[in-house]
Length: 467
Image (tube, rainbow, N blue to C red; front, top):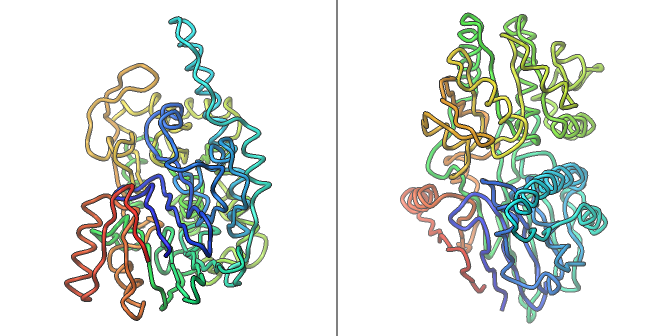
């Protein structure tokens, strides 16, 4: 009998981690993600595994976002030595993502231990060290899409394109247990159809068990055309008022999509007077990887980048400035108006965007544009919910900058696309909804039953299901 235990992203959006155990697979983790929100030191100090990392035989990783991969260094630090299976592009992105996350943690830990020393308290022990990332990368076993590979004598895996970010995968596991064939499909994060830079998510039809994400299970996204029109209007209004625009954006996926659409606006003559600052060393590194993989992506959707020598970082957006050093980032503070600043993190839990808020969030001429999901408890969610005062770096700031939300840029499938994707499965597989807040999953579950007669369970964190 195979079992799946839901350790993270069960009735929550972050911390994706599911524990598969059977005689065919051994003990396997599907993702090993970090919970988002709060201080980096607090997050890691409070993250604890509900299993012995030394007993885990393998990790199968859906994609590189930190809420799916961020605890891999801690897993290795605590004794895991097995293989980590992922797609080829995911392995490239992990090098950047995990090093950035670990370096941020190390910096914050040094500051925290200095504060503790001043108060006569014992220092906190590091949960990860820089060498742990190198160990993770050595354990990675990159695999191409659509090619079945064996990871035990009785179990195989196929990675299918999930269309979410570069390298994102739908994981299909086929195992033989007591002469019985069983198939588990884990959606990872599903992308939208017809998204630039991404291929459409692959649809599957056969499974005994399906774990499907439901981040946007309670709603559909605004149409992309309306979203671009809204962006045009925001830029025009802000220009006329003499302000600046700040866009918190994830380094992987969202930043690249934004650069593409800003490039399109430039070619339409809408962006002539604006200067775009990509103020994220990690996003710059990631975009260089995207540029190398453009030929594998949706070339019809990115036709301007599929011919000649134009790339996301080269010539497509002429007034793009790459700010790498802290000094270059701080110099943006001297710009009075006409700057579009893209900086991490996407949920404002860290990164340079918080420094820009410190300088500008109290100015009513400025706009802050949110272009992605903001998880509960993050600074981004608090701002979207309309808070009037925030604390940054130990000081309080009034929020006068106008907060805007663009709903069409999400890298996740909306409700209609989720229903369509799961409806392709035949034979009534056991469906479990994960990676969504309770309200979203409840609405999606009811929608599936009312419209398709499909029953879908919503597991709790720590729950185990046999199949």
